[in-house]
Image (tube, rainbow, N blue to C red; front, side, top):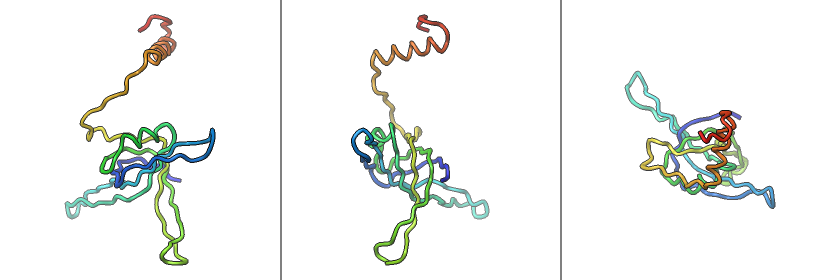
Length: 145
């Protein structure tokens, strides 16, 4: 397994599914996209496209928001682990096909492409818990600063 970070342009809308059963059910958002890797050829002065297509599986807490937020054509940032998969070719018996898969727990929008950013409202309970935690970390107990 190889660590990989980079920008991905989505080639299709993400698909959300759940794996496992009962209490072990986990969300996974499958994204098909092309990793962006453009390099300048100093000899010719032309840009070369060295990108590649991969399936990205976003797991855990980030899966459901990723499925809601991202759509085909979006550029997103991925930080994950790349694995090469091989499976039998259905059309050519006895041959195999290989492809890249990336597993990640983190996917974020590419901020320069955003037109606006809106956070969901925090509950007063959540805000109180954060203030209490901050006070404990700073040693100001109850100062509210």
